[in-house]
Image 1 (cartoon, rainbow, N blue to C red):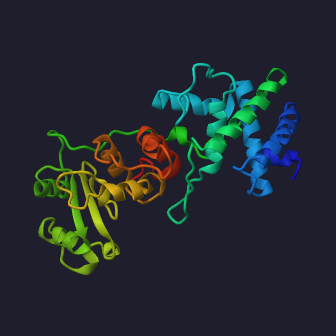
Image 2 (image 1 turned 90 degrees about the horizontal axis):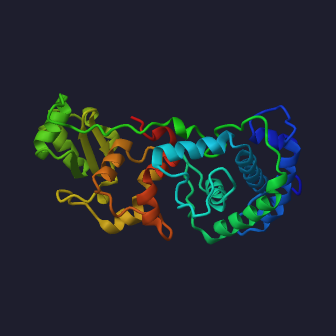
Image 3 (image 1 turned 180 degrees about the vertical axis):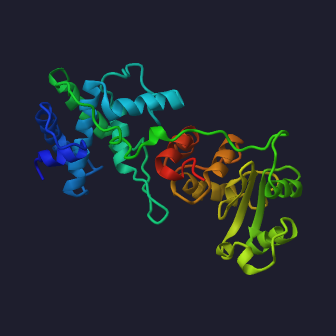
Length: 330
């Protein structure tokens, strides 16, 4: 594919009506396609992926020129929620929010290489500081800068969804369901906290230990169907007792650094813990949020250079981006 058809452009923009500016930005997307194809980042991708990349970069360009649309909305909401315009990148002194910036382009490229999954589908991770990603962002920035003065202002705002693929700005940050002295506790939470002497997190090595707790402490009926049989072959459980009740997670206990957790393992936390932030359904979000708020997930990191720094500083955005409807979900 050496050209990009108007139908491809319109589909990406989620409309059928052709605007007067479409031809210019479609031609620009086609003009940067050779740079995308030549980059080690995309040279082995299929033609459709390469074209989608060029289109996404051109959509960023048209949004930056028009100062509206999906890119404008994304950066405004990110600044409101997190205090800066972008995840990952600390803007340089010459960063101008209402103009084109290499950091912006790098983030767009990151979204194209970092794909969320689902409970039954794997996700993909990519470093926002990958050298080829940063190199391509500089190349594309120079191509945009050379055409900046002639780029037309689009009359209709682009879709608010194109940047991250879902309506992330509508996902609110809610308070932790923490127990306070004034909280009226349910039966399960009360029994958990009495057993743990007030500690919200309880740890169980295997299903047998968990069942003993269910029967002896919670008073559940001692028969298989009453003891969460789906967990029979799981291990390393964490229970989070909170105002909503009792959350149970499995295979994550090694990540939580607490004195009363016998399964804590810093090496495993570093090697495996990022799944909690990236794999939908892997860990209840309230438990993840509690762990980060209390500083008891200090070892989790992403599996590339600067992975700990990136995750620890951007964990909420990363969880929001990857977990989608599981972010702040029940």
